[in-house]
Image 1: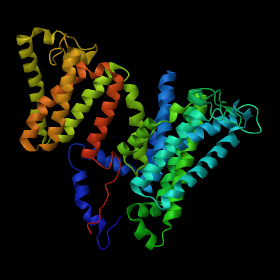
Image 2: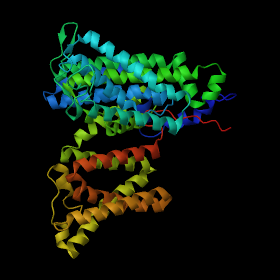
Image 3: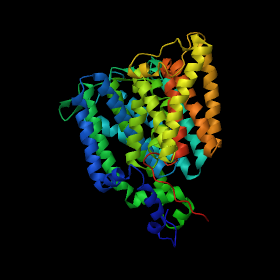
Image 4: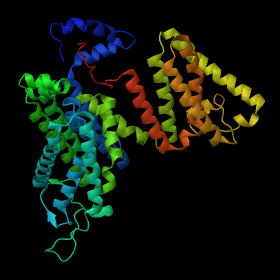
Length: 478
């Protein structure tokens, strides 16, 4: 929030001057001159071309997942990023929208509403549910609100698992509301104004259109009185209320709008998957949505979309060992470039890491020949690593586990050191990370995904707490 009696433009001049420095300063200046409108339409153009650049239905399905995550992150951004309400029940609105669309568009109750009627019905019901869940926010804030909404998410999952045998006095047979663990299969494909959405490519373009419309709407909403009221109540609800801002009504509106977007997204997800199941809406999905929003920058529309792209695409990249290897070593290089200054020190550190690897490889080959007889996985990068990183043929799993423990200890130690000591320890730490990757992580993609996401988030919160595209908070010193 702007500080009274302070010229914000003057006070932020030093930050702007520091931002436009370094090798990438010309690119940042050119990017900022373009403006948000042309950048947004350029992004939409690239996304629209994506399905025509690949014939793989799997790749287009990844694009659909990215769009679904982007819509969910935009909805969550209203509640968390703008209104400042810690909603841990958000994924339940997503599931509610999916199940409600299944009820009115499948053989579950033999109701097959037109899509033009089913979608508004789902959105309105989801908004009403969000309004009801938002009522506790009038009295609960912070951790208390988070616990309440988290219970709501867990209750939703339990209900979907158990509401398949409801005994009603006027029915001879139990009512199957959710299908239990088996879910509700056989959901109708969408048909909008006579246009049948028959494959995943059609849903990709539908999601892209919805993403564009919602992003534009939220962009103008952010600059409206409502958007300013959300941000004011987020920073100081008492002061905002004293300035006649209807804080409670804005909280309910944030919950309702976030739930409406989540319900809309859930209905499209149900149509794409042609079925809904309880395991689709567990806490892991909630964590991924929050990770997308935090990584991109809470409060930023473009940040929410960027975070969704990273969170939804990185796990798919990690499915292929060679792609995962390029991503891992690219991340190591990015860490070095971002943390080591000046540039001459970076060059010295990079050279020292390369030399350190060859020395260690040579010593191990002389002392313990079996320690270098292993071969890395195939690929161009694997061949380059053959004479640099040690790969034992015996006890590889045990040594990899021990090295992983040492790597964690070294990483924690790095956070406590400064100056030359930190630079010196960085050299063996990078090499140790390469050893752990080649001996353990590259062979366990499921574990690697979790560790990589955790590492990305920890590094981001350390180096840039506001996220990739988020704006730093201006704290009042009083």
